Image 1 (cartoon, rainbow, N blue to C red):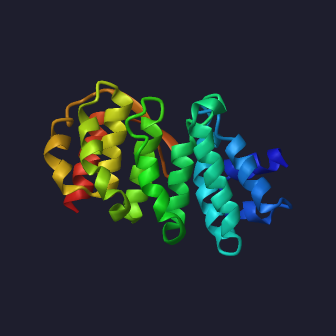
Image 2 (cartoon, one colour):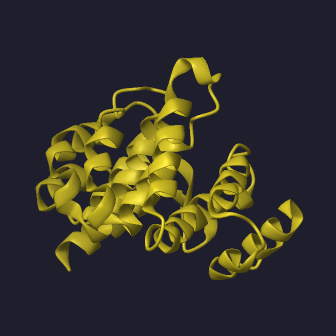
Length: 211
């Protein structure tokens, strides 16, 4: 069954996952298990699919998704052995796809923005949530803007990307300072991993804000 899930993720057939002969809880667990290898495109697609599947499950059995939220929060803690680095992104996908049921999770996700090992995932979650419901993470805007000056390229780039998705007007002046930043990072967009300079991401964010 795991190979079938990987095949569907490879083909970007996320909706077809719900047709597999698996219990809803087991399907979510299977997707979580595929998120550990961050060098694989399957990991990123599993995170995206997790949110889509959670939306379908929550229509009839929201308690299963709520249980998954509890598991992901547990995985973030040190005692889970450091396997929870993708948890902020998966939690972000749950909120993005189920804002009416899980809006209370948004500030919890943002509370991990100061955690070095989790910050990149939190910024991705911020961009994904903020693209559709920016009000849920508005309280974290200043902290996200502060990451535009982070010495780590991945955090500068993801902060710029998130602010563009959120269309944060207050970030425009700081984003302009990054237009010549030629540091390269990998970023997941439209189902693919893409290599971009931070300057390119900043320009795209400025364009998104101006629109």
